[in-house]
Image (cartoon, rainbow, N blue to C red):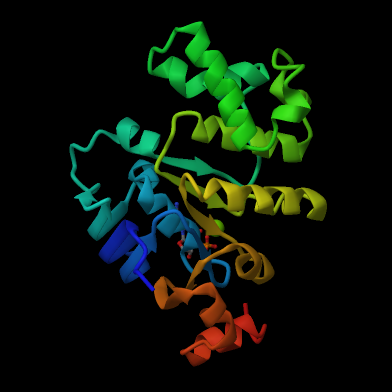
Length: 254
Ligand SMILES: Nc1ncnc2c1ncn2[C@@H]1O[C@H](COP(=O)(O)OP(=O)(O)O)[C@@H](O)[C@H]1O
Ligand SMILES: [Mg+2]
């Protein structure tokens, strides 16, 4: 089997909040056009690691990072890096759907408007393409001018995904994107992730091991700021190499 292309490479990445170390010497490769799940007990550093990929930790006072992260072979760690440009390439979706209190249409074109796109045809086409890709188009195509806050939570989360992919990022970061949703809506989002990976690299933080096993291709198991084990999801869940991974996936702690 050919090695998959690599979207992101972490090289000896460590991170401190003040004098508390939250990530320890993480080296890792994230495959392109796959879903990589980050799992591990609460507080092990999943969200912290996810935030490194689009430099969200920069906003945290006292947070210090060492090591390197490469996005398609290029370091994203430079002090003078264009952060808005990075965040156009690496989008993020959070646990709570956070649409803007604007129309459905304006939510989707938000990023394009920031870039100064005015051509109505381009905006219209993007809205349809992004909403179709987010599996939301049939439900909202006749009410694009309705306020996004009137949508259900599951629809709002798909709208937020549409907003993120409208500007064609390379990578989509998802931090427990279904933990505020009911089981049926969760399955809708999980199916959506399967179609999105054809176009994007997805990194999914989840505390739900069944979800990681169901949807991801590759799994990274973290414990106290370190990567204990990373590998193909099928292998990691059926034949873990580390005792600690085995204990965690069999529910002995977490
Ligand atoms: N902004 C912050 N300032 C200080 N410590 C933080 C901050 N965010 C997270 N931490 C700490 O870093 C560790 C990892 O947290 P986090 O990445 O949120 O874990 P997870 O997402 O796996 O639950 C925890 O000990 C947490 O308390
Ligand atoms: Mg978290």
